[in-house]
Amino acid sequence: MDEEFEILKKVIIEKIGFFPERYKERPLMRRIAVRMRHIKINSYLEYARLLERNIKEQDLLHKTLTINVSKFFRNYVTFRRIKEAVLPQLLREKEKRGGIIKIWCGGCATGEECYTIAMLLDEFLREKKSSVVFSVIGTDIDEDSLNTAQIGCYENKAFDETPEYFLKKYFKKDEKFCVLKKVKEKVKFVKLDIEEENMYLKELDLILFRNVLIYMKRTFQEKILLKIYNRLNERGFLVLGKVETLVGETKLLFTIVDSKERIFRKCRILKR
Ligand SMILES: C[S@@+](CC[C@H](N)C(=O)[O-])C[C@H]1O[C@@H](n2cnc3c(N)ncnc32)[C@H](O)[C@@H]1O
Image (tube, rainbow, N blue to C red; front, side):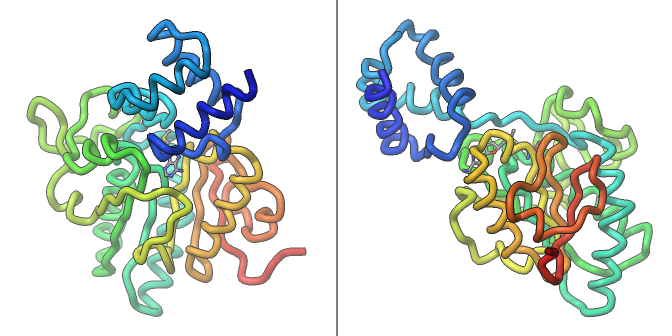
């Protein structure tokens, strides 16, 4: 059984470019089981053989393994706190030293989070009558999700935490709600694995890395948090998901800005 599961993991890496060893094993097995039950296969080996030759099943398993749920203003209070505790600091810094505000949403799924932070910042800069410029980059491994993000049109269910004000101001209503061009222009989407390097992902001022670590093993979480630290500006900010936190040595790399909303700031000197 263990041997069969190892064979299946190899096929998953080879055929769908997904690395199972990074993720928590039980939830991963549960998600694989969903597909196996669906096509009425109960041996890992048999499923591995099918997966090797069936492109449609490769797509379906990839969809099941990468959980792509997102929505605008997900955990609304977190965004309110970003506006109160993070954006004023970023603005002060840029007005003093120049340069643009650079934001990265890692594991952005269908793009709602990237557009949310772009709208929030647009609004904030307008309120402050500031001419500081910003850019947002969203990355994910799931190409279909990124295509949806690029289109930027969403069904009602993506908005149950969105204030009416933002819905009216930043969307055009057709069959769906579509993000206005002036916001879309600020956001760029790139297909990228968390571990991969990219020329845009350096000297970042704010990283939103929400609801991605939760699926990963602790050792991999630590590795990624270290990468995040290195990609941030000297005093950049990190926001994690509501049930995520810093692990191991990475606790020494950040100070807490808001423990409830999981907002952290890069330390200048390692805390000991
Ligand atoms: C639950 S969604 C989070 C969406 C958004 N951040 C939010 O909180 O609403 C998790 C996303 O992480 C992506 N993901 C998982 N493993 C990844 C990896 N190794 N590299 C890049 N993205 C990854 C998945 O494809 C999925 O779209």
